[in-house]
Image (cartoon, each protein chain N blue to C red):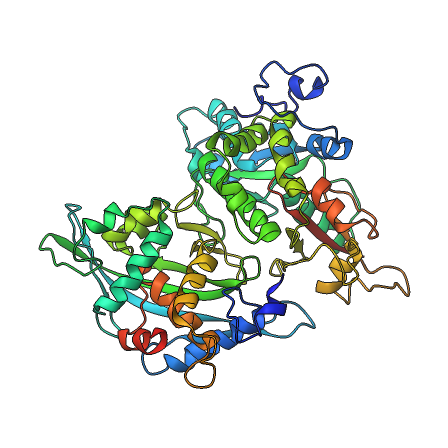
Length: 312
Length: 259
């Protein structure tokens, strides 16, 4: 089930210490305060209907829809709530979830990116590039019901597409770690479903109870870490196979990983003030952090560590 | 291990490619097809200060006989190179791919279709020309080439996934491709270079498929004469995967390269 309307945090998430009533899983999530805090990260979003579209259906002054969105969730999972709000506001308007799309300051938002990643790229990365420091919250997102920009956004069949995309990322991460997608493909249908259901119903125990198995990889050292690096200004996303260990079989740090792809921005030895930083979930971790630790604990639910580069 | 250590050992062909392997492979393919198919090599800068990389593009008009009745009659013709015919050797390769694409070992879909993906004419058709952009791009995750494509109507409108199955995928292939993997064999995602939506063939079965082919076709000692396995890689791969979405390799090239 989708999250509660107008409240991203469900009571169940807040009281996870008591046995969750709807937890039917045989495996519960192991204790991991980092993963828990990341899971609970949220962003207040102000959704406003595109002015021209609203005016076209005779609804010029429609109230915004405010929502405390989970960073790890997807816009597609909010669409039915967003649409309902505006349909309730405007008579004779129905709309269609599959036609809904979002933009921030004119840039269409990719629904297949987690919300937190979108905010870090289009909000924090972009505003730091313009030298702005003021608060961007609530994040002001514009909602469209028409003119889906098919040349810029993948055509979505609402929630189903989002689930398919999520699972293809999980598969790709598995392939990077193990050289095949057997671990995911051999999961039972209900185990696969548990990942998505846990995420879409904001049920930490349900998601991490299953995701823990993928992340720990049965104790086998990953061949490569699932990492994607986002540079400013729509440069192609950097995604290269990254071994978690160096030539001496020592765990690589985030700095070593970033240096391999972006040596100018991330020198192994800083000779002056750093020129760039890597942001995960809106925070800037130390570059001495072990990359495999970061991957296992700070990845998004799609199993990728999404690093957003902030140029200083 | 990463491909960097294994891919350059000619005696043990690896189905996994490094980017530099991929570049050798697509440049060889470009040379081999230069008289047959107008593929282009497109260079781009991954980011400042990094060496240029490349991918292949082909724009093709596909003449699709779209059936109104939905009967067994999707036809694909190529304006540039004429309608390809399938010879028995290719059919074997195609059947092999079909088995790789389906998770069900018994390829009932295929046994029922004696003719394979040979075109059949139907009277009850509407004509539609599609302009299809095909891109062969390296996937650093899967370490194989990936086929990306978009198809446009004459008015420039891009076609949807459903229309793509209907117009571009031969009917005999649809079931197998739809049922491949978790979400079907074709999906949309952002083009890794252009960062805009493209369809693509899922690459997660490419390595097992190419390993099967390489093992059955290459003798480790035959390095000296004829194209190397890297030089054959794209022809072999595309002859297996491209047919399903309307891009083919001339039959004589397949024969010459896969012996």
